[in-house]
Image (tube, rainbow, N blue to C red; front, side):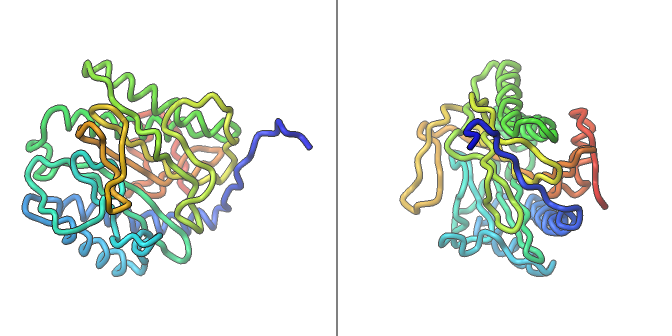
Length: 282
């Protein structure tokens, strides 16, 4: 037995990727709708109801609802909440930073993505919150651009970390990269192997293969990355009370390039910005 053989990921076929694209589009359209409804005075439970109705109207079912007992269709994490916030009676206020994580299942395949936005629009946001949101999104695409067939999956985390450090230097700030929660494989289940760290690892990691599908999701804080889970057993918050942002996409890797399954345009615009090849199958 060769104990030094590097793990390889089993890729999806083109037909399977097309099915995943269907689920990804449900998620993309739902997040687009939720961003429009993230206004002052709305409750996170109302956003959740909008999400569930929309997902079901598209012939899909929510991934999160009932997952290990989770009670929402989406995760709504506000301000110091990093991830897994449970929708409820909380009323959103102008200037709140909300991260919305959404998953959907269509024809047995999963899509998973997250956005961060300011309640009331960017004009209502604090400068440091806008910089955090932009830095986290930029890091997401840096990580996506690092996905290459026959290269280590862990190059994603190195690219995310380098991007966050560069953004911190630009804004004279040290951002926290949350290490306790990472990206993951995705396909016929929402969470599958392999894990996808958002930081540089010493290990080589598994090799990316043709048809690899992963969800990349950096979670970044304005302060220290130390966190805890609240008494609801789900909501993760920063220990120092600093705000956090979360961006995520489900991505397919082909030898010719990348297809962002949960982006409305398949990732064409953003991939062009970072100089990464766009290779849709549709």
